[in-house]
Length: 513
Image (cartoon, rainbow, N blue to C red; front, side, top):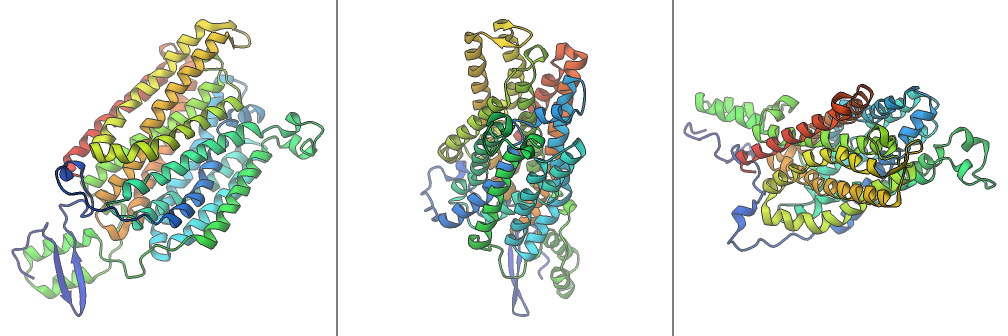
């Protein structure tokens, strides 16, 4: 090998009839197009989307958000029914714990699912994830105590590697000309699930009480008032598993995985100090396992994942604290809404995302570029969290029955208008998750290890999803119970994290993604 080859210079070298590709290190992705670079140039024709596989993948993906979100409308009421605490201000801590245990279990296994999908294919891992979702949601509906509920959610998290695998599939069936159209699929199906799941959860609980003198009025549903919505969710998961088995195609490349970018760096540096070609080629041909440290050693990917980490804390914290605030009395900083109303609020958010993502994201991404749009969206989070105490302060003036937290007609309109604005801001900001997928792909050190790269990304996102719910709900409980800053400390802390996320998103400009 010549000694004067720079580390950032791509090579294509033949060795014993095989070709060894040395990837250009300084470039984050050969197929990534920035909007600023394409202005004034002829547009590259867009590759046709594989619509059939996207349709199947979307339906398969849909089952998980349904089963994940259907508990949101009633989880606080379930904690009351399970008598986990006598203090109403502490209910949020336990409901946040239930939400967090899913992410804790998932972050312990999702990287391994990503690596396994690189070795055995995407389909088997998809099957396992769906099976875990089916089992866990069914048993969650039959929870008799807090430990049962926590175990059920943990099973779902431990067996759920589908989010990273589906991102890998999307990356493998798209390219830079059509990825902006396909990448929102993950978010679209998630938000469709956010419509269906909360409606199921908010309207099918207590079936024996709500539909007396019907077949649903039986001893089983009287003992397990949350079994019906969870059984419906499990049935949807079973249908998705059947569809995946019959129609989902394997996208994992059949050829041997090329060497990781880390090995390329080592080999190139070795070449600059050691002119012996046989030793360098021996180093390149030695299979090495890409570790988490190797992946995170690449600065563009590390900063991108950190930005996603903060976004995930903010988003999952919002989901839990929104349900908690809606459930809590107005006197404790809440909105005093019923489980059904909470379900409809979540469904409204999902509907907004279904409209915003396919029509807004592609055009905005083309116009402003991925990094600029991501940066712009991140500035919404501080304002979103500060809207909660502002809206509670406003509706307090419309309370006509403090004991029952009853609002006047005008107050009800004001409250729901404020909730709608809050949800709209959050749904607009949630476009950043689709953008983060594109940025992770662009920053990946080796395109042949997308499963592992997305696995690392999702592992760290899972840590954030474990932190977000328990952090937001615990801060809310502590703020209200101890009246820290008048019960508003939670909003100040979460808004500060939002500001941190905004500054982290700004750092992505340095990496030419």
